[in-house]
Length: 175
Image (cartoon, rainbow, N blue to C red):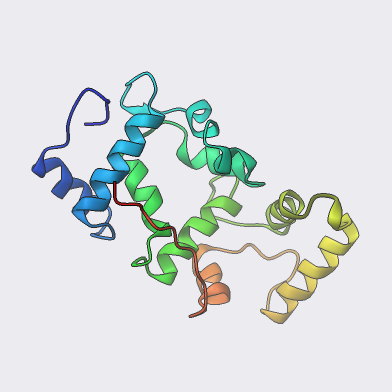
């Protein structure tokens, strides 16, 4: 599974569906497989960072370098699992877990003030000064009951971001 020359069997589709907690239909998984094979230019069975960067929307994303740490070298099953956070069927905690991973740049399970400042810098560029970013973040953390010295864990992110209005969805086109 994963090379352009191979085809998905019904067993493969069901296995991937189970791996992504049934957040995609079988037809969506087939569509994702076609897209995966297009990205896997050398038919290696996984997608490299360079192959991900060939997607203009991905390359233009201000968080692309952080996202690359999460997606470089994914096989098809893990590619679908990664994308499942963007499914309309994904729960808010599942979506927040991906957000947390983006902020946790050193993968230690903790997000620091500086981790968040760096993401804010990536997102705002020159539109905000370092001082403005620090002031905004300090105020936000204070309102949520945290300080600059706090380490935020995944549970903290869920507590802060668990909002019924949080949308993080991508439609998978049916080919």
